[in-house]
Amino acid sequence: MENRSRGRGKAKEEAGQGNRQVLGDIGNLEVLRNAEGKQISRPITRFSNSRPFALRNFHTKLLASAQAAANLVVQANEQGTPLGKKRVIVTTLDNGGIVHKQSGVQDLTQKPNPDPVDMVSSDDFVCEMKCEISRRNVQTLSSTLNAQSKAASGVVAEPADQPVEIDAENANNELAVIEYLDELYKFYKQTEGDSRVSDYMKSQHEINEKMRSITVDWLLEVHNRFKLMPETLYLTINILDRYLSSTDIPKKELQLVGISSMLIACKYEEIYPPQMIDLVSISNDAYTKHQIHSMERSILEKLQWYLTVPTPYVFLVRLSSVQPDKQMENLAFFLAELTLEHYQAIVSYSPSTIAASAIYAARCTLNRRPFWSETLKRLSSYCTEQIIECAKLLVSLQTSAADSKPNALYWKFSSEDKGFVALLPPTKNIENQLLM
Image (tube, rainbow, N blue to C red; front, top):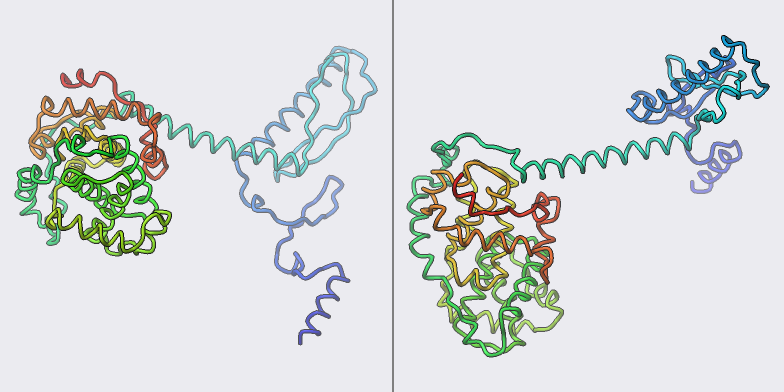
């Protein structure tokens, strides 16, 4: 069977057909007529049935050039000027878009520097199509940047401030337990102080704020690499800070505390937490499984297994549901996550304050009016005067985010899936927004 198959293939090759089916047999040929009226066959391209803008534009240019050349000849004849002997070829198009060539003469004395008439070729067509594709890509990118610029410059507006029932759409969803949400968030607000950390750097002898920032940035990269839930990231940093506030550790164990904190957070939040071998590998084999397990037990004992804590994430989810806006939500999360790397923000402000300030600063940046509605005030229990200082800090962190080292967080929110929100210019004079 194999020899007979090869023989048939060889026969086809000798007949000029090769191993592929003849174009005519599969309907990939179309019949056209050339300028002399003869029938010719050519492969059908994807543009045969639908002519894109680039092809129409190219045909229009050819017709315009041909018409211009014809007008010059007519003008020369009307003026009685003797025509030169130089022959030119003028291209024309019929209704079917077929190119024809006509010979003629042109008076060079009427036009010292005539524009050459472009001829149609496969290379020209491909080049024209590439230019059109590039033009469309540029227009798409330009539209995106213009939309972002308009959002930041005050073009986007929202309806007048009215009471919003953000839980109405979940009225029939028993899993949403909307009848308990208000009491649940009041409880979060009352107990968030229990899991807050005080200024612990003075009690640490070998680590400082810069080392902590580098460790958190590395944890952000690990979080992105494993595609973990956002809740996991906030809980990881909370566990890390709470343990550091109660235990003096050597510098060489700071990364070990970070990866062990993430392991605990993953077991608490994720359905499928990373395997131990993955954590060892991503740590560049700096620690063994035994060391990570030992640190995990030490952290849990020190924290007394207290892991159900309110982080900025739980408040952000609640506040961003007021007039849902994906761009505003991404920007608010970007501002909130900037505080994870900033030690002074963590020890100075509560999670609910950080969340409310991030929403307020994001709305000011995108000019979402009103900047702080009655619904937001009711849900957060904060007025603008109570969050303005934290919002100013977030804006300053946003301003310096591009130049900060390390900056994994900046590149994370400069991606398309995050709406390029890290590239937006920060709001200016945020204090003046209080009057609006």
